[in-house]
Image 1 (cartoon, rainbow, N blue to C red):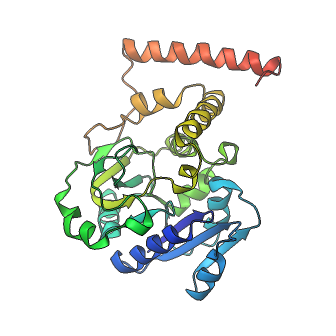
Image 2: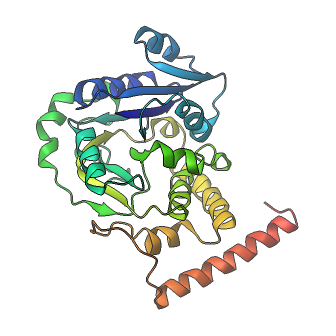
Length: 294
């Protein structure tokens, strides 16, 4: 039914939890596809033992190139991108596929909602079942996740996200200029928008527990986000002529409770102010590029 693509970088304890949850809690017979960045922690041996299809790079090539490479192994109509530090909760896939069947079209981008155990991380639902793999309480989570309610809403730009393989191939997957990965999700959304996708929806009953970007948390998280976020915004703005913030707010209607297809932006005063600010930034970055100041 679904080809689940997972890039991983020496994160074996979390990857095991992720894969075990997919095998235990999925409704359909899906396929798991992993790209291993480096893999000196025993990841390759584990995947071979479990007979899981994988590709491998000797260095960390980032999630964009990793996902594009492993997605070529897909055998199903739907591709779902997941982080390696996510635990999938029961029937996560049935809920997504039910919505796909309701839409009756290939033009969609659907996400599961994230439950975060660490309140310092961005998330839609908070419930502490353990902030790390060794402290994870699976039974506690399974006994309580259904009590955590959230509406469906528009504007999804995050993993785990499901799209039709034809749409993934049409837009070329992730844009590798966003490597190692910051900004690649809204860029994918923009590419899908430009080929007619108007459903960017998060489904509140399809849930995953997210430990929270464990690879980058090994570094200084706030500094990493600041640097990568700034770089991603610059690349996005120069590529598309508008900022990620403008795209999310006025095109994707981020966090808006709305189940119908999106239309173009409501061109009110705040929209035009945002566009003017983006144009000024665009010209500024172009000038810096022209005089070769990065």
